[in-house]
Image (cartoon, rainbow, N blue to C red; front, side, top):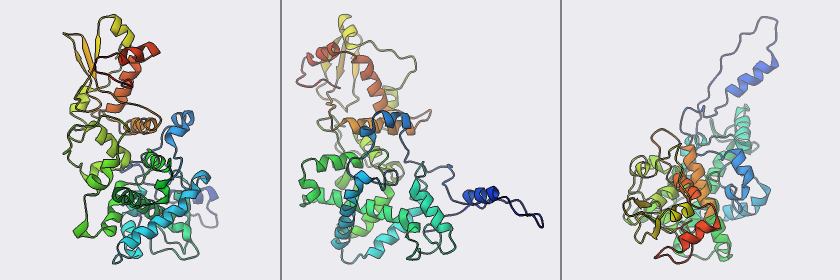
Length: 385
């Protein structure tokens, strides 16, 4: 794969005068492709002050995907399973060689490089390695055996992408695997794969999927292989089971798919939901207890369109809302989707889950608020949030 480098203009050397060392360092840095921030970035970091307050909600606990947590000591045990999954995936289709998988990654490597908003050590190592006269990697031919760091980014895409595909294939086909046999393994893996910072672009998965599965047997990667497993435990999703698959440009990565699954793909991100849950800077909603004391009745919505289907009948003074159970397994997924929404801001962008969380924050402040919701007619068990 070839990355286009920007060559910065340099100050001409005055005869007999050496160039300043700082100038040479800065010029070399400007010459490294850094995605230039002009567009295409889709995988962001959670702001540090959020992450530091609740690391367990934003950081992977079992497997690293993508560059942000690559090499972390606590996650190294999974690296051997990535290599095993790669070997198993390549073996699924004998007519497709390892070279075909590498070629698929090379075809999307440059595009994937530009998706990441923050440059970690792997980006610096690759850039430094390719800058050497004998380097390969992101620009030029393949790296020589003595300089493997130039291919670290491509290797990461290959390993992580094949791991995700093989994981979902095994899960769909109910194949025995030691990772899934461990009681906590499956839930931790699924949770890690949906963290905002623990991602590779979806088009990398598509490229590898095109190699792994023969065209005649190829199923819809999104609808049949991945989408059924993007869910929250015991939650209400869209009632429309024939939801349309979004365009390739709208896929991006797995957390975005989960968000679209929650709100229902039948809804447009900038239309219906933005009207139903449009944020307002001056919005102040009384708590459930205050509303109850004022005569408002709370009812469980029996057939909600989705988890955001909250309505208030002003004439009757009745608020109806679906039930959603937020437990230990769901919390990281929800907060990561909220964090994702904050990275896609714009004047026409809706924030359905952020707005939902804000509304629930207003409604439920003390234990008494929860008790009122538990007593709603038609409700059994957990409160809606």
